[in-house]
Length: 173
Image (cartoon, rainbow, N blue to C red; front, side):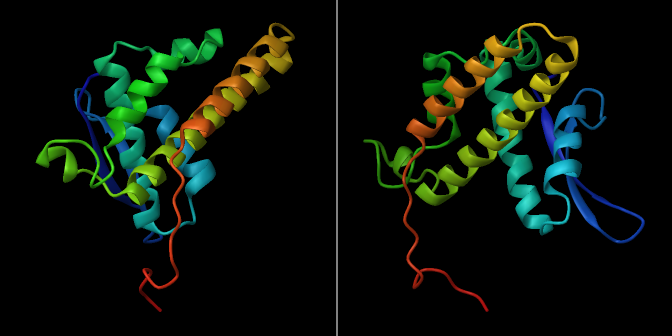
């Protein structure tokens, strides 16, 4: 996969807007994110889907930078190591007001960072669950993959920042 990905909003024949992640080198939609968006997120607001797709782009950029072949890791059941998981959390964004330099203090809000991480967690959980379904039909290594997935999700959840949103901070109808 190329390091450059971009998000484009497809307008379907019925007028539905579907944000999609594209490979910058080929100009083609990325298969797994497209299947995920259409099977899990379709029907939600276009802006919500767009935020999920942006989070997936950040995940794939992180994997490209670290030379992590995500599809191979999913196939083998290895997923991300603890140091890679910590690196992913650092790469997603520094919450505002944390860190020493002014550039770090202008990072993502804690809520945005947590939302991106939850979107990434949902995608990785979906990928690993899909692999488990494939293994169930093949009959090999199902238990090992399931244990690896459960441990990974538990480690991921343990690192998620806690976010409290006051009802008074939300605005809208």
